[in-house]
Length: 433
Image (tube, rainbow, N blue to C red; front, side, top):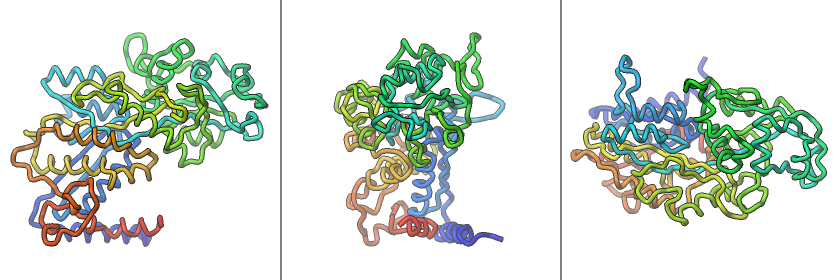
């Protein structure tokens, strides 16, 4: 038997398909990359399909930042007959690697980074609350954290930990968890340690210690200690089942799971847990300070640019930008797919549409200065000459202003309207409210 909610959703999708102009071919747009924004992308794609008068089929494969980059550069295996144009956009929580960026350059291809969300890597623990220090939190500086993951600090009653946590009584072994495979979370975590405490964490970023002496990728990196866990879910489950454990997880996932965050010592010497304000502060400071993090030209390499250890009293120290990777030249791509790609990116970065969805899915809304940066980056893309772009039923026909009724105009083929809805989306919102 089909459960009632699932049946209703199926009917909603069928009705939505029938509502579209059947005389028009379906426009297909497919992206791939990091897993962290997958729910944000899926929800925005479903919303865009519901807003459209003409039929759209939008998909996103959550395969990790590294795979998303490889498929953007592609092809890697000639036998597969893959073409990088099959991917409308890539996505990653890390900038395009130096090797991949140079490979594109050698092929006379220009790419650009479009920031679409701000997130963080949280470090969480499972020490019983009554065994923590006087302030009820676990405080760690980057050096101590690095030595825990190096395996040189193995117990919670080590003097280096107790010194930062007066009154702490935990006297157990430290149970360390790390990700099984290379991930953006692992890259962010290890690069932060490399940048902030290089004498305590001596293995460098994951790109270095994730390979053996012959340069072959190790299945889980050459970690000196700890248990390998699959994905954020595996890390969370480990903390929930094992007392006295420590694990790094993307902030949104850890917060949703109700895990207890460690207060990390920031650049200004304050111990802070990840909060929306502390994460947003990092991006706001960075965009105002010039091009150290976000280059003035979005077609430049972003390699080595990050939001680790940004100044500020409340600023959290391991903040990451999620990017959409776009080709600078779409002129030889299918015009309808290019139009859908442009409209989708506009929706994602819009404070009126995509950013609230990002917040619902564990990210922090981008500050307005970063939204403007992303809009300027998107404006650098060359689109097909015969492309009929999408407009929005809003005050100025863009995704960035308040929706309004545009009589007759809103019924034109290329208008995306939030006054069109799928019943499944309506029902979901009713449940949430």
